[in-house]
Amino acid sequence: MKTELDLGLAHVVETLVAPGGMLALGTHRQFGRDLPMIATAPSNLAHFFAHFCTQHGDREFLVDSDVRLTFAQALAAAQTAAGGLIAGYGIKPGDRVGIAARNSGNWVVAYMAVLMAGGIAVLLNGWWSGEELADGIALVDCALVLADRQRAERLSSHPSRALVLVIDHDVAPAIGLAVLNAKGGDAGVALPDLGGDDPATVLFTSGSTGMSKGAVSTHRAVVQATFNYLAQTLAALGVLTSRGQAPDPAQQPCALVNVPLFHVTGEVPVLLQSFAMGRKLVIMPRWDAVRAMELIEREHVTYFVGVPLMSFEIATHPDHAKYDLSSCVTFAAGGAPRPLDHVERIRRELPHAFPILGYGLTETNAIGCGNINENYMAKPGSTGVASPPLVDLAILNDAGAALPQGQVGEVSIRSVGNFTGYWNNPEATAAAIMPDGYFRTGDLGYIDEDGYLFIVDRKKDIIIRGGENISCIEVESAIYAHPAIAEASVFGLPHDLYGEVPAAVYLAKPGSGLDAEALRAFLCEHIAPFKIPVQFWPVDEPLPRLGTEKVDKRALREKYQREWVATGK
Image (cartoon, rainbow, N blue to C red; front, side, top):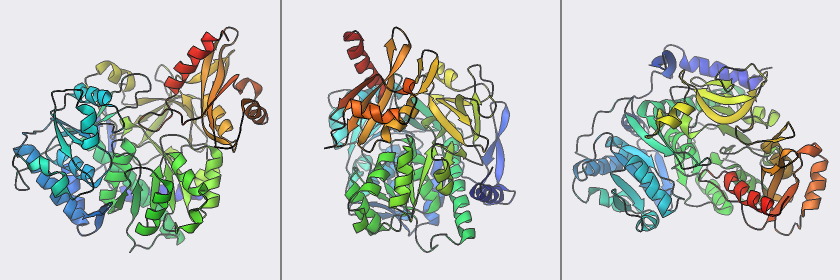
């Protein structure tokens, strides 16, 4: 049964996208069909930047340590840098320009400049090693790479054909990005005309199944995905206004940026949506819970987004009551499901705020599903409903046929915001994108009677023990419910009798003294015996993670499978 919030959100979205509405719909012909498209959106990101930076001109946009820039100042700096890229370095439409740097105001301006110059912004993972960075640069054949000093040093021992320009943080763009104009060019250089079909970005997949792939998106796809997020934000604001709970319209929205801008969550819903909303971004170079609370108080942050552990760390920090966090009414998470007890704890410890959850992928430019406020509290195990007005969500079987409500299959998403394919990898592209346009996510899930998506597991990550399917996520959630658990990962091990059996690696909280037998006894109270891991490996350091902050389960499974086989289990 649809909730009052569901109905309210749907009504506002319907009004927004109606003919003559703020986000009136049109169509775009793709995959042999007419896909819904927000007709009022700019056709490319250069126009998008120019429009919204002019509209919000004198509003503060970027707060990065002691550097503060308005929207107008950011646009002016980007125009100058774009002129240098064109006149000084010969960048032309379609050239790939890598950005390898940590979060900063100058990262944002550089990103804008590359796109305004007509280049394809290649967002290199700032946590990669020099070898991985070099591989990414070579994969898409970057002509130029804008790297901060730390990443440039990593690249120095891995020669490539790309020219590496070193940029600086913690200074104004005129200083930090001065190298972009070192060979000439300024704001007076004519910028190219770009169309919606022109490629705009390359983002890299997490690499959990092998070498990273470069997901290519057009200007249309990125802008449309951003506007789909804008529709969700305006719908939520409309419902809150009708309830008399809307924030003061005189207060500028403000987000704390502690997710990497080189990942799709940082790029689209956080960064790009902020242009459209006139939202201030407060940039954190590295995560620290105390520093986050200081910035929330000082800058009147209204929106927090990060991996689930971040908001939980704030909610459970012994000093969180010492800070005025009342401005921050939303604690969003993505990249991994929240353990169910985290949802309740955040709401209890921060009663003025709601936790929310989003589900999207690099290949969908972050749009997919969302579960917010009281709906999330009611269904904390769900990633929410398909995000209107653009997302078409389906559960498909292996043959690509749609499955009925309630049946588990592969979660698949179709929208004008989807990527066009993997760079120079037609085989992977054909495997991921159905002829009718659905992107096969590799996640297994089902849609309940109310339209809410529940992710069961990764397609290749279900343990089949003697014919019984075991969801790794379900077992991990049960382990996380133990108050002494900091991190855990569950995977399958080969077994002569059952084919596979579950195993777990876990990190206990300092001083807890949690041993395997105590954890096993705890699980016996909560899940069926066949789901309980036959082997527990305690570790004393954080679990390895991919660039998206997801646990690198593949590496863990390979390591412990070797140990398991070697011991003759």
